[in-house]
Length: 543
Image (tube, rainbow, N blue to C red):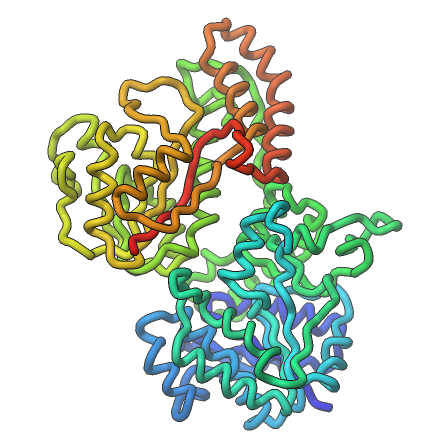
């Protein structure tokens, strides 16, 4: 029976699609991959198809001239290109089943890479009309609360793999219609683009199969249910002690986890993936194809440089290893907190406090935020002066009208606010209904002249409730291990011991700090068990 694979990308990710095809071809003959370019940019498809004869490039006009494809294009293309891209999955699948007359089609996200024989998945499509793969997120909230909650927020099944045969076309027709109806990232509406629709397929349609092979769709979100271990030959990695790795989903979070060491058994797999990506990006350049943005999506094989301790000198910050600075701990906590809650961010956002271009860029690229405004609250508290760079608040009123923002960001500002009850009420006033207020608050840190408040879980929850917020969700930015690591680091860097002693002690303490931080990655902080915390972060909603 004839079969084909397909993916949907923007043009600057063509090398990802070529790497995907290469990995498929390693375990199959005459593998055909159809690539839908969602951004409509011409990339000289003739050159691509000549060099790679089993690659076929499609554009929006090929699928969106009429019918459901046109409806999806008209609704999403100019408003939300991500919604357009994900809504087109079932349209592309049915196009290949109907127009190209393939018997089996498998859709794959372009950041997937195969390492073992996958032909059993095609065999499954002899039995099932639709084939889905679970996220395999943790089923146990006591072990991994974040991923347990994500099962409800982002869906049981991962939209990066969808297999369909001709008997599954009616299911794809339904999938396309509901994506046309709604395809957004909005936790308040229980939506995460197309993925939550997949939850209903096994209920409302017959012959929907679920892949039970846990070596399929290996990613950072399934580290608990799909535990990694070394095989007896110490070469390959086994998943859940029995499954070989069929394919890995190299999302940004997966890559970050591998590089930072929380999923380090997958390092050889990532290195192979990097090598293939860079091979194809180089080939694209040699072909003379100009792809704007491809340099930003290329990946370097260079590993992050290790920081060596020469000496500690608090008067010269350049000579302090990053592990001994408060900025290292606070910035790491902020970044992790934003990554944890970024799926809540949406629409028009107001950032309270100091500007941070890298933080702004991350939010705009990894959330549903469409507008970004800033209000310099911290400078108003510290200096009580006006600046011409951006708006300030007077300490009484935020200078924006009612019901204006979908998201408000309060990163490391509440500890400097002498009258938090006023600020909370003002934030509530300028937020739209179902708006989200995100906050981070340090707890374990040295005394500071701007220090006005240190919040506990209980006082913060109470003040937010009194200001009219509901559904407050608060987590620790770090627990016992992170707290001890931070205290050791600050003791070395800021205590009164001599610089010569700091140099000696730092060599002893640094491995301990790194070990504690590694333990922290695998430890769930339960705020109900009275832990020590480095800080708090969370979200709360305006009803």
